[in-house]
Length: 357
Length: 272
Ligand SMILES: Nc1ncnc2c1ncn2[C@@H]1O[C@H](COP(=O)(O)OP(=O)(O)OP(=O)(O)O)[C@@H](O)[C@H]1O
Ligand SMILES: [Mg+2]
Image (cartoon, rainbow over all chains, first blue to last red; front, side, top):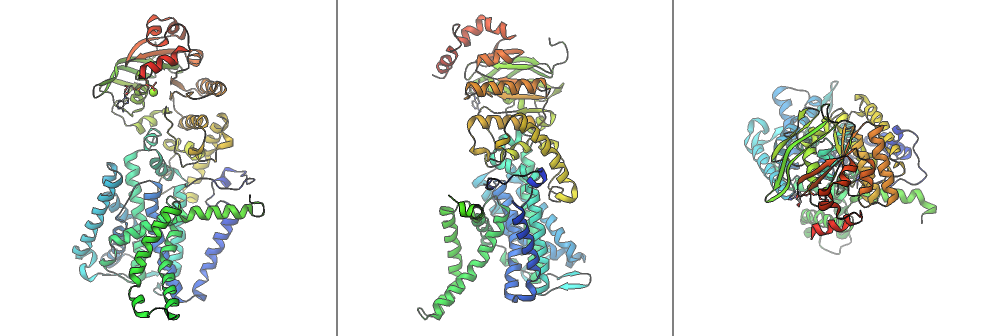
């Protein structure tokens, strides 16, 4: 799944360094770097609306990558990722509001703090697996949600908490145009972090635990620690994503971090590809853009006058949830390895192109 | 022969699963540098013995010491840190990983980078460390002649190759003691000869002490320094290969008459 080599023949590496690169080929690396540089100019040309979508994709994709490390790479399960996302948002706001910690420090701090909380709630994973672990994390989801509602000192309770904008060198990143750069930096940084993790010691240990835990243990891997650590890393990502979300909106309220959000994160990684770093990003893009596309379609239908506008627009939110459900089912049936796998196949196809088959 | 302190000492080890006595009062010692084989009919408790040494099972009685250290309470991963590696009778590779990554997992206890220094790959020195170990892993890959498959997904390989990758992964641990559970099962004669050569090289050139379970009598007698025979969880003989071949108990319990081919038939009867 993750390391299945689909490199075209004739592509030989001459050094081990070249052989351990994050990107399969120099060309793809160049394209990736070029797109990041290209994105730097996006605020100059794009509508605020598109910038908002990008920012949304960034903080969600960071959290989704965390969940993929837990579910896709380590083979565990969590139904509480949404709550950890919320925890990061509140924690960062709390650090800045109560301790006057600058936001650029409170965001990583929120990540580490959420990691600790995630490991605490991950403790059952040392003993239980599968359905039972799913239930335990479901309990975590509800406990943390309840905590948000009750712990006014932390979350502001029913009122929610204000979250200051990021301020660096006296400049406040409080508009879509400026926060875009924070989001882009965080996205690139956290994805490089993840890709590097997966090609070094602890990332391999996660996959080993997933593929064959008994022989992983014989190979010197401490199962309890890595099962817990996987919850920790996953929550770390959720916390960073959540903190970004909070400081972008400027306000955190407890309602959003529900089980539905946790399920949406699961949908992202299933659609993008379990056990794939870039899959988490692809799945997030898909889930964020799906309602936009649906809306556009609804717009077209109503414009054409085929159906009366009111009903359709009213029901759009239902359509959205149904559509997500439908898409997950379709992916599970027709594309169980996710978008990342399909992408690899397309790449391999173009490589071979005039000589394919 | 065992005058010096043994590398591995098993004393009075017993193991039961409910009513099934897999091992009863087993004693033996393995000295540094030996190739020590365990033979016996199916269900005799050979794999259970290896599992007790590697920590998969915990014996009900008895003690297991390695390098003079009592190991009975150690977890499997702590035993690999001490210098014990093993392969499995029923293949246990990480199926979705590449052959290379499988073998790199063997370096786990030798690597120092972790979940914070690993992600800071270029600045923390993790890259340098990974590449250093990668070079050593490539030596193992060359030695076991699997360089042509090192990018393949482990789960897609043939049985014989998977056995070889498992051996490579165990060797990557740099163990002082390597436990091999039927390393040649299901192989043809040529593959068996290759494997026998690898095991001898590991022993002689890489300095690893080998404890091996094997059914092929030719191989066992050919490469072992000493042989132990288990039957119904009890040790019924131990000695030099020639002594074992001549031992009356062994013939009765295991070898049948004098024909080696009867070993297989005997095994079938054990199951029935
Ligand atoms: N986990 C277990 N649970 C219950 N019984 C077990 C377990 N492991 C082994 N046994 C039993 O212990 C006995 C010894 O099994 P073991 O696997 O050690 O035999 P073996 O000598 O390796 O046989 P083979 O040549 O078939 O590999 C058998 O009766 C087996 O059924
Ligand atoms: Mg066995």
